[in-house]
Length: 366
Image 1 (cartoon, rainbow, N blue to C red):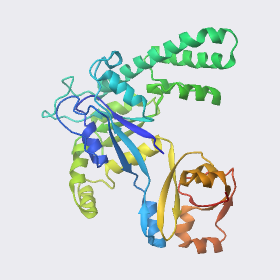
Image 2: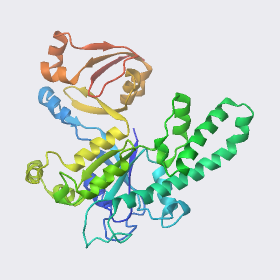
Image 3: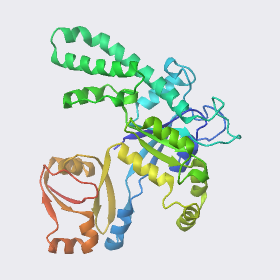
Image 4: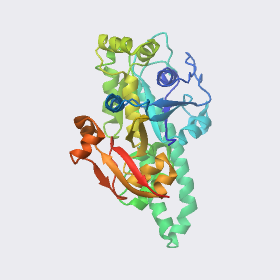
């Protein structure tokens, strides 16, 4: 399932350093703008402690976690919506992603220059927001010109599209992102989604701080929190330079010891990956057997046949039923046989909405 999160931000805020921590793909991290010109794509393993717990009971041949794709996109500058810097390239790349990870510089360091000469994450956020909003406004106004006449003739779809576009236009003209606009009907929601507006994508703000602020944040982080409080956006505090140091350590035990020394239970990278996964509206079901314990990605709200199709299209075509064990029941009873004996295995049909962490076995016939 090739859904992607795009890492965006002004030049020199720590995007590529963070990307290097996330992925085995090495983006060049340098103290000058545009060191990342082509978007680097990393396929990132999603940490999931449940797989290890199940493996302790099942003793499989291997453990296979699920993944999420992260794209490191060139830094944006003022005027990008008009093609300044690498603006057109940036906007084309971000349009292809499904969610945005917006990195904001929240640390002081005289050795790392800032493209605008001073540290101000709220200003930095507004620069990128403005460029994306201007591009969206251009897109919306072009579409309005195309559908307005059709809407006036009584065409229902054209009228609905026109009404959605006008709502977006009003918000964007006020300097608000498209994601601040809500729609009541599924038809409107689909039209809004299919416009692929840059500021309609879900967003997470990543506050890149110094090591001393990795746990509690700092005054820059508080400024960001106050600014985005009405956006319904996620905020994550990460010390990218510290995460890079952690990534250099060879063993899991060394990394855990480092984290304990700085007062953290889990690395910022792990938290970022998990939050990015949720930002894409993704969840995980699990298959567990002697050959492997494997995590599978599906979109939240999918029903059993759709999830069966993630494994193989034949599973969805010939779906009969799904045998479902809740993760906590499996851990509590210790084996599939014990779960069955306790009457805790569910037998579900085509309308069953799969839940995160469900351990699934699909019956099918083709």
